Length: 394
Image 1 (cartoon, helix red, strand yellow):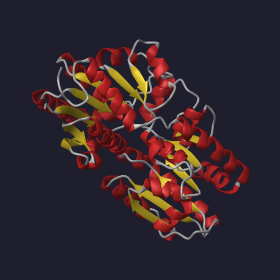
Image 2 (image 1 turned 120 degrees about the vertical axis):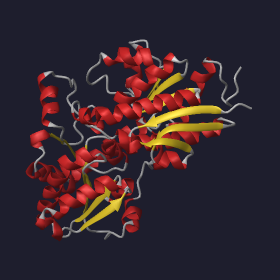
Image 3 (image 1 turned 90 degrees about the vertical axis):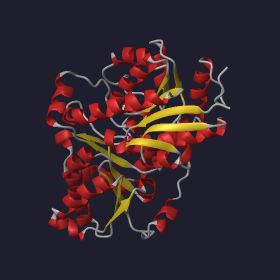
Image 4 (image 1 turned 180 degrees about the horizontal axis):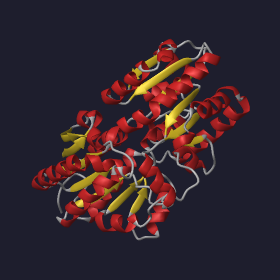
């Protein structure tokens, strides 16, 4: 029996989680499988041999990645050489489209099937990128239900597979159980702080998040604070900024390694950086306030070139088509703005009940099989190219 060879390149923490779930689903269908690529701890635990760590692709913005360009080019060159020498049956790029689409083009030119798992937001900005995706990818696996229709109009093979988080997280989260697991008082209010899984996000958002937490805690001495950290690098930066604010020493703050899902389940509300964490907050039933900052030049380009075409930037609002979560961008990310929005999330009972109904509706719409459906779509693609589901060539 031949062995199915899968090359995977995942960007940062969320991509690592998606990759690990996909690996598990592929193993259920394949008699023998080998995996090689860029992986985080979850993918490595699932059996992927890592040529580099997923954290190396955790760069953000339009211009900020330029200072990482030499390193990223070296990484890209190494991956192309090692993966082509290994001769995989399929390459799956997980998120990180700026990096992975370039790899996909090289591998497709060598006859390797190519998949992009997590669609770039071409429906939101720079729609012309869809032509590049059509040339370089045999299949796009979409997490959001409205994305395949966009691709169909551009003759790109795309499938909605649902979001694995929607299947992993219960429709009725156990808030009491999460508080107990974290050693929190059951009846006292809890606010979660998630200033980002990337170093750049942490550098821009930790200080205003902490300033808001200090002000809210001043008004609510019984407030319990949670800060789940995605990795050791961002934790070190958060703790550095925490130590630089004398008033922060009085916060009733518990810093966690990972455990974002548990923190969001336990919390009454959350301050969250725009990204996958906002979706996780929704799925955990946690009212949230969303903030985002990019570099000054990136912000200028976004505004002057009108690159973003949507009224919202956070996933909950995009999925619902309405402003479920208050959004603050750039200079609007102030402790005053964040405090006002968080206090409404904590105090307004009717608003909280409305959010719970809307969150549940979105949660249900995203339950489409997730990793299992993604694995089936990949294997159908390979079957079309002469490779059956057990890794045997026809």
